[in-house]
Image (cartoon, rainbow, N blue to C red; front, side):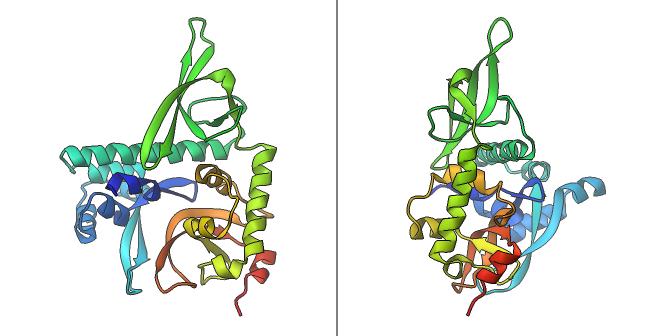
Length: 273
């Protein structure tokens, strides 16, 4: 599988920011992580820029050792990869930036109750189907919205289409999504949190989405589920971060998880024997 196919997992939302990590940059660009760290630490940027766009963090390697890595914003990523040259690197940079923009658009849509279709809105056809992000609005000769260019991911590729505005609906905050979210958490609890929660922290719920789809039938499309899980909050577990490497409490390995802060009742229900 190509590096570009993994880019969806390289970008995540944390503390109302869209970020990636030096570990992911190394993986996607097929570089040694130590070389990416060396490049990061030699960047000639201001202290203010560094503080706003790079955060020293850590990860667990395959042996369980804690090793350093950096989390970075889109601006930090752009500064870092400026010197990565070649046709392959250019293609990866474009896909990486598009993924940043997709996540930023989703974050923008989650942060406000936008009443009309706009660039960055998450929409669906009124008849249902996949979730799209609006990348452009096309107006008619009188200045009225006519069509929207929409983008979405399909097996690692970014797809685009032009759709009539009257056919689109803002669907991420409606009753159906609230029901979908409730049904998801009900299914997880019914299957058993003790079988799905990879977190060693009693205050944190760590779920691997691939495992959940293998264990639980009848779930919505992943793109739909991702959009509603990012809105999860009390009385359900509160969304914190996606695509986080977690040393699993269930398996003897590190696994990619979505992190949620657990309400008191969830905490009590997820204690292990």
